[in-house]
Length: 175
Image (cartoon, rainbow, N blue to C red; front, side, top):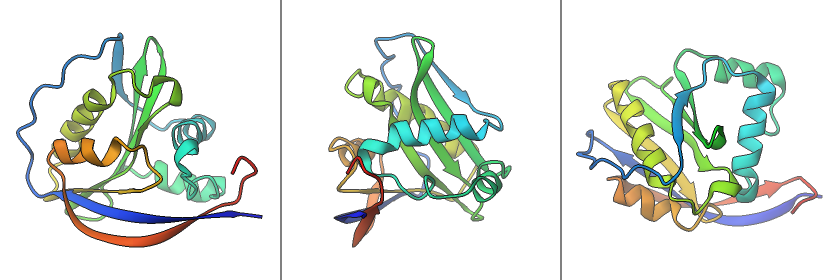
């Protein structure tokens, strides 16, 4: 039986490339890399590992064909932050909707949360998003996300434009 979680979803956007200060280099050796056509099992590993603590569910429930159609679309861009040679973060930019680039997923592997990587990772991701030349970069977050997520997005220049209640149904045993 699925557990139900009432959330508040906050919708944020940037309508111009922000003048981002250079993020301090993380305390660990890192690499920010675009994942070109990652194998589905690797994508699922990243999505489930990063999103599990925050109840990311949509992509977990997709069959391989549906998921492949999304992540192999040329306007969907997947990035991995590596720290000390291993995946430490995962992000996805969806630029399939014309003038918008939407950061669909962004987060750190639990072992690297609190290691000083979030601001650096987001700064690199925003440069990648704006390099696509959208009119606007959007993202959404909810009250199940890490408590530092919304303040981090606001410090990076995102402005909230809407909030709505929602419900996340988590059909997995790890409640």
